[in-house]
Length: 272
Image 1: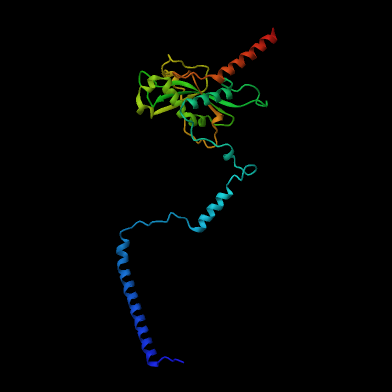
Image 2: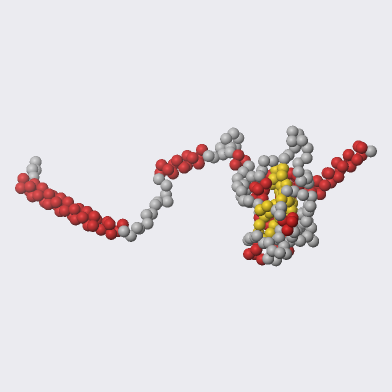
């Protein structure tokens, strides 16, 4: 059996203690240097970078929340927002004009206020407003700047201001095509268009009209931008007072007029 020499063991222990003392002394020197330079480094106000990767626990919680918020394949528990999503705004183009014109006819049946008894099953409430467009707060001795453009409708419980907000771009687009004088003012003016409105009337503009006179313009109110959260495009509509050049879409309107004429004929025949 081999037994280590005692003197060798003492020498080894002494060397270990020496190395340990050297390490401790080095640590003390490093700590002293850090304490001296730390105020100097922090005086630069260096930006602190945060990791963009979430912690594991937080990431797991988000995944669980996402699972809980899923549609689950339909049926009970599906939120209203998934079944009837709202839109931020309605596009300004011919396709949207056709759609919103159809909506206007479908909701109003070409009336400016609801007909019938609110207690009837087929009764539908809606609000119509005449709409006008001008450039900024344009108002001089010759013109108020307001061009009569069309009519807007909001159905059921929809706020009429939401109908303005949702369709503002489409109304401006239509006005620029309807009124060359507006378009002639250029792109800068187009960015400063204003939307005005007043209670509905039977009056409609045509291509020969000019801007409203001062007395008419007194009743025009400036539309306010409101939240359109939850508002559906099918619950609002817009009808220009006349077709913009090159646009002749009146399919549903012609059908509605034909239906009205047939109903009137039946009434006349029944009374004769």
